[in-house]
Length: 314
Ligand code: KPL
Image (cartoon, rainbow, N blue to C red):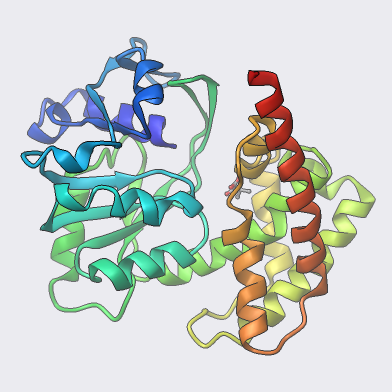
């Protein structure tokens, strides 16, 4: 997602706006910077887009660096540390835009940095990396921008001002006044779908064809709905099975983000999906055995995948 958004932002549909000219990539460390070719390739654009980059480590020492708009595309579990690592480059006016799956980290960052400057994006775009810094925009979806919390009279103006800086046309970005509800629904869908695609090592649509997967999917939907019904902040889920069914049909050929992580030997966001759901259940003394079982299976598969990837690098 980071490469997709960086490329769309930097090319900004051909507009040479100030914002488009000043897009920079913040890479994890010097090793990531050394492997960066200086440009991002994306299936949406004919030519690779040159974007300057710096490594986050050591940035705290560069007192002059100031970030006006920070688009955070790290995995959910890396987000708090990534934003904290940039503390000296942030001002009280820096907008922090979050693109993670789940909802826990968005709530934490909103609480920590203030509801007025934190923005959340929920997206259905599908993307995968053909090679490092070479992204395929596989599923053309949409993206919704909003802010968590009760809101105030200036929220709409803040959202519209930020929207002007984002590649709204290229990535079909719109404002959602109730992004919280959208993120809760997406969380429910990701809890039902993502881990199961790993357990069955299949594309999204295949979950409906594999009898065992379909059965677990149905039990997961019931359990997720029951847990979220007990969470006062969560919106009514309606018929989760039907919603999941629709998403699986629309994204039938997608490899879920979690399965992509596993195949690349990377840590997944599952702790912020089924893990967070289990936390919500525990706080309300509810049982969620299917989610716990899925989480357990995921932990085993994930550590095996990470070990295998490390072994192949040595
Ligand atoms: O959001 C997704 C993901 O892969 O993380 C779904 C909805 C499962 C689409 O692939």
